Image 1 (cartoon, one colour):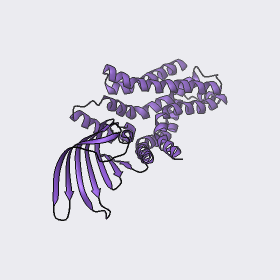
Image 2 (cartoon, helix red, strand yellow):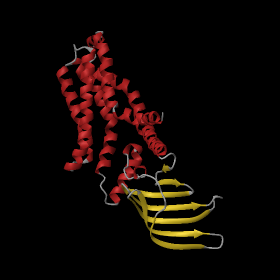
Image 3 (cartoon, helix red, strand yellow):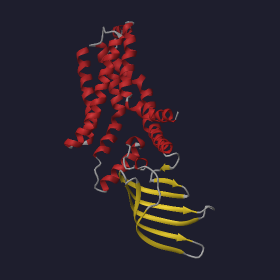
Image 4 (cartoon, one colour):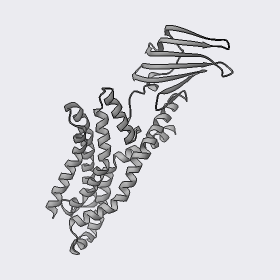
Length: 308
């Protein structure tokens, strides 16, 4: 049941990613039905050009496209963040809680805050709060780093403060074992899932990376890819117009759906390919993200000219 809930939370992201393909298939199906009933022939005989028909398709698709953009850029990031928190909570039996600034872990009566996890099995900026049976704070400890060694966490460079009614006693320790029994995979919060962030948040994160001289190519590509997503969906929807009046004019509905699925899959794979290519060959993220849409748009214009 929990796995099903987790999958449902990820659906908004997946639907938005595959919407260009779905838009092409839907457009092929709708125009294909009109073509099979000779309604498109009647529309052409009435004086409508392919550009006029394409304009009608744009108007019809604009409402669905607007709803999908809201769905993908507003609902999907929220659902994605909720899915990650839900999964983490389920795997740790409620022991961990991920937030936008770090991770909280409950270890019996101790509450541990983890600032960051730069790599697997390594933590930084950890603070532990210890409470007694009456929920009174009795100690606070700060560790600069922690490493997962031989199945146990070792905390380094600790400043510990013991708190009582009379005074606070502070001590320094090179190493300590806090008895934290939790696997590193549940604390590995280094990897930033870009689909958990809205576009403004993603832009702010890219600025943060640049200001700290860190690589932001991957995040820039995804940001531009998401900006071009509505345009890509619109281009894929319009691609059905020259296809119906051109190569697929007399094809069966099944063949049209197959052709749409193949083209949509090719577009998706091209989108996945240009990202790593931009990082390897250092192409501008803007160019790499827009290239699949430009290729499909050029192909559609070519077919439209031929269909005329």
